[in-house]
Amino acid sequence: MTETHMRREILEIPDAAARLLDASDGALGTAGRALRALSPRVVATVARGSSDHAASFLKYATELTAGVPVASLGPSIASIYKAKLKLDGAACLAISQSGKSPDIVAMAQSARAAGALSIAITNTAGSPLAEASDHAIDMLAGVERSVAATKSFVNSAVAGLLLLAHWTDDRDLLSALRDLPEHFRKAIGCDWIGIADALASEASAGENSLFILGRGPSVAIANEAALKFKETCAMHAEAYSAAEVMHGPLALVGPGFPVVALAARDASEPSMAETADILSGKGASVFITSALASKSSLLPHAATGHPLTDPLTLIVSFYAFVEAYARRRGLDPDQPPNLRKVTETV
Image (cartoon, rainbow, N blue to C red; front, side, top):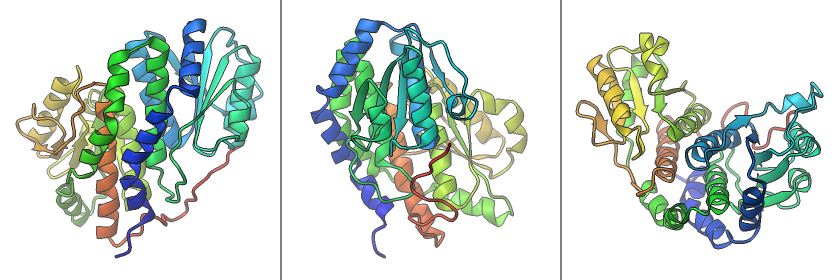
């Protein structure tokens, strides 16, 4: 079979990340120093879809390292409701691959006019969003033809971590980021196709769903994974915090119910493993990226040695899995029904 655009772009992730890292002392360093000089009391984010998952990932990273609270702004606050927010002394981070969705641009413009230091991460130099911001960062992912964003999601998250590292002068994080391209290569080679048997069993039983779990920064990664699974595999998936799944969603879990737990090597790993084993004890087919679980199936994973970079290798392995699983189901991951590459909302 001809290699899909999605597969090619997954294979490009290590080189795309390396390209961004090589350029990280330019616009990223300047924007990081501007954040350090401002010392914002709050950071606001503006994004939709996969870009919003990257923003959510960076929310956790910022709160855990810089100690600054991060809030997500609804783009329609500016574009539809014309409301004015009090953002003097704040920072605003807008993320968009195309950089031209009218509502994202309008919210970034509104935040800047309200006094926020505005920073844009885009994959399109000179885009309207870049022009609307104090600092424009090109994520340098290169042309992405697949409808399902892969390398642009990863590079937007890497760009955000680089921005954070320059802001806080975090040398350990900068060092970990420079090692990421090699970890991404290993992550692409991690074989997760064993999940397919559990999904096939679910489908044959008349069900059509998957739970994807995370905790802390990996909750954002779980949300991204669930979106890509729905886009490419035409099956339902829902992302939950490993803490929240033990409440209402637990009622849906029965024998054979498929669960993927994206555990990073951070403070949440023991609780993730405990939740996975509880679900396994209820008969669920649970797959986890942690050796701490004793009743669940271990997924191979590329550990990075840093709690903030670890979740990014997990999404790379998941991307490789969903592309392969979509083709196994006879689907073309490059042509998901009802979707197009760029969605421009007002």
